[in-house]
Image (cartoon, rainbow, N blue to C red; front, side):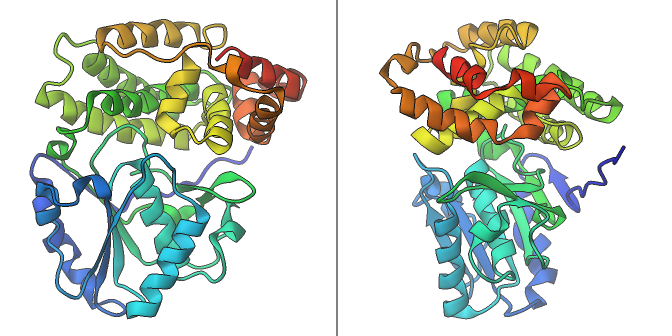
Length: 359
């Protein structure tokens, strides 16, 4: 059996106000390459208080990027790379400040600044040839695990798939719970549930082990404390959610995700649903596969007054459902984790189409 020899984040700083250390943290790296940084910031923060706290210098490039409603694309990363190199040459590093999509753009961009051609060539495992430039992540919404993951998920012309290798992992992460306090309730719920679903799927499959289980159980405990709390949005729950997100990401890194995530890729690729929301829309219908997890998830929905759409598939043509099923079918490692070595006998195209028809 081949065991994973995975790369973790080099450095993590955690705590309220830790974002204020950004300039101090990156100062030693400024001597690299052309002595400037690229800031990739969620457009949500443009002209808001956080945009005045970036600690950037005049020579730095700052890009405010709108990731709503679309997820990151290969074309977007390639054109950003070309723009940056044509303006100032190779930067000292890339800083991503935002949610999972911004994290993925920052990770992918750091790799594409040093690897030739289109990012479409590198969608898959260990296809990147050269290390990227230094990259630092500052999550402003918690749950996706993008801050710890070795994957930068991009939607390309052919597929939605990550640039996945050791070089993808951030060199540094700043976890400041103050930054997630202003996240709207629905998004705060959907992203947090991504962590919860990561751990349920990691725990309920053949690739689970003592390492992945320890992180999953700790993360699930924190998720329960947050989402079943009488006052879920109290400040100390943001601290818990940031840690849960990191641990959920580590759990799936050393195990795998399962059925919900496989279906989510199809829903996102074909119909453009945001990843975390897609997971929630799907997970509510998987009680036969994850009975305890779905039961608890529905309690969390009720406690947080979140309503998810029903009967979506009535509006979808068979062609649309087949297209989504084909995307999901081509993620064998997820189906294998969920159903075991004979997964091909269970996770047929017709079976997967049936799952989409539940939605």
